[in-house]
Image 1 (tube, one colour):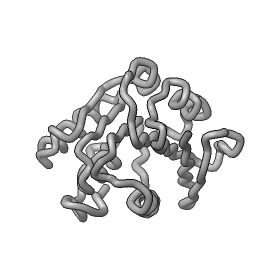
Image 2 (cartoon, one colour):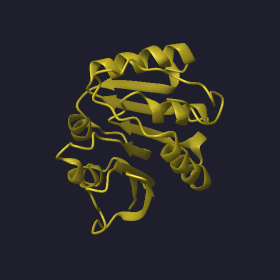
Image 3 (cartoon, helix red, strand yellow):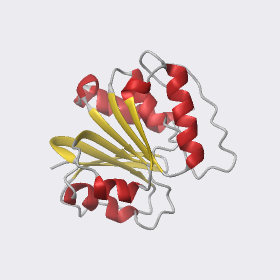
Length: 179
């Protein structure tokens, strides 16, 4: 896993992920996604929510590019421990709030609104189709914010009224939603 751009660009991390329930986004797909974000949003001013945060890949990329307000959520203790350790190593602890928590409980309880929300759930998760509707029902997104869901070709959100774009990177698909 590596950070692509920004002040930590090129830096590599080696999470001890032998038995982790993670599937880090490929560099190819992440680079494509961040090119879209960079060309459309002011990264430095965003309040970001990283759901199913795993290794922290997306969180680090945002912070490396100047974002100072990232919330990371994952329920797997190993991932959370790794992200806390990495945040300390990078001296970015003041830029990231880390929650060891079930994502669906976090969505239910959160009172915050975010400019950008990313969800990279495990592909076999049976509740993936519910995630976009929950984000909008709970009003977690700012009126001009974006929600991006990473999924595989087994899911389609073409009929979702909030969908505005879909990008394919091999078997990795990013569906973009907004109000």
